[in-house]
Picture 1 (cartoon, rainbow, N blue to C red):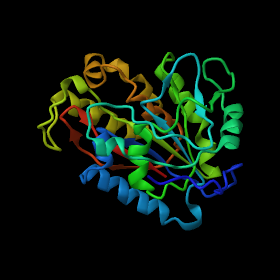
Picture 2 (cartoon, rainbow, N blue to C red; picture 1 turned 120 degrees about the vertical axis):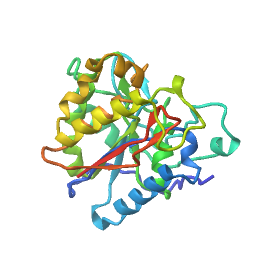
Picture 3 (spheres, rainbow, N blue to C red; picture 1 turned 180 degrees about the vertical axis):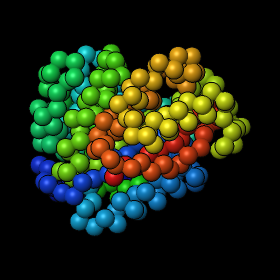
Length: 285
């Protein structure tokens, strides 16, 4: 386990910087964090690309993970040393042994909580300085991308009691953070139906409904029709099959909201896991 350095300085404020990209990462199984597979290699390559930006590297990562759901409001992690959360069961011990000791940024979290507003009420967001940390939707992706764990990480919860359009609306508020050194990362899956998972399926095998929903979302993204991504439930039974519960779709709305007009999307890690999980990821900017 890599230990925190007590002497390591914590980020106190954000400074103007070249615009950061915004990412949506399909994270799939937690095992992708430690297995040598196309998904993990894709995250590693993207991390190398982002670190090659030199002075334009991220000052801070703000991650919206499918695995931190709140009700009655949004929260931002505000602890100095966020714990690595192993929020899964039935996997090998090697996965539970994983740690991602990235620092937090309490001062920045407090500032962002005041700056951002609940789309539901206009109230400031809450700060969680004790309970949460970095769940596997965050660290399973960030560890291959930034293995040194030296970039501060905050998580933003998703108020699951609110309609999809409000999640996109909060994403719109994140746009300006990209010019202040913040890398926005949404981590979920465009298709996520564990009930229909087939562990023996190959990378390109998928149900027809999974491919149809994934293609429909791809088309909307390519057209730059990002606001309408919040209307996915209009697809009826197709959306129900793709997302029996839709917490893995919502992070896409935050990432899409943070995109500036005219930014061209780049797709990566296209393909499926277990026939019912789309691993499609998107990089803008």
